Length: 229
Image (tube, rainbow, N blue to C red; front, side):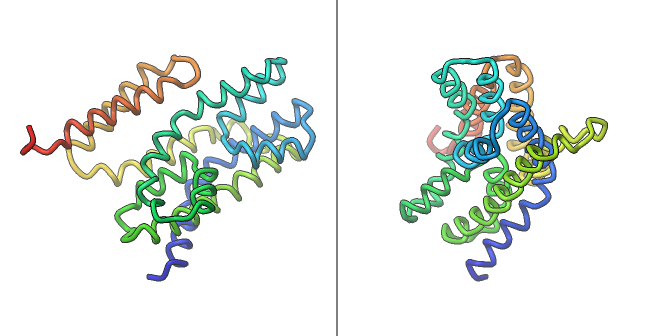
């Protein structure tokens, strides 16, 4: 299969996931409008920050006249999970140039990482994986940008009665289920779910980081080479 086909595959497989992103983007755009952001300020945040949860937190803090340093630190803490994502992505990009690494880092989202992880068995080489990732990321950023712009212009056009807030977590569940190939995978997934619920109330989404670290350690322990024990 040619490289450009992997790009198209990534783009195509991301499309179902973006259905849960549209209402989220509309909310961000609506909040920017209500906070009296200009269209270009909204677009600038959307392009240069490109992190939904951090954008929501930043908008809320700015409307409360919080100090700039508080806004920045809050965004960094919320996005700490991307350290884990980028570490997992680095092997695929080890032979890529600086420009590719730069845009790969900027385009990294929960959704693009999840789609990449769920389909890694279909990507025989790092070059194929990078092409797939950029295809998925392009689809994601296009939908996100258009959703935020639509929300800014038209308001939150998705009625609350539709319950679309569940679209994002359900899309991740759909990606997770096919990867549970044995009992160890299921056990780690169940452990992650349980711990994340217990730590949900921690501020700044720190519980997500703690859960991820504990789950990685558990997975490493279960996957250890018996010969070395």
